[in-house]
Length: 82
Image (cartoon, rainbow, N blue to C red; front, side):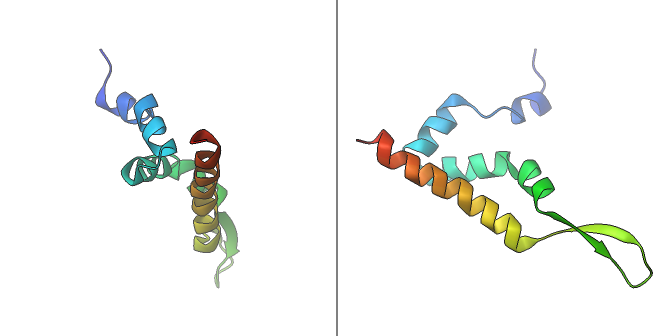
């Protein structure tokens, strides 16, 4: 029997299919599914006033990655719906 935590990490085929066909809720679920990857790719190093080396999420980069994912889906829809 699968646990709920395990099920949440899997993006269902139906969700992907709906996203490809333009369902807004499905597209948001796809973006939400990839948030950990988007977050890790948007991290930027920073040295604060005390000299501590930390990371922060660059919101511009995060938004750019999310928009790229949605744009790729939008471009794919053009070919899918021919």
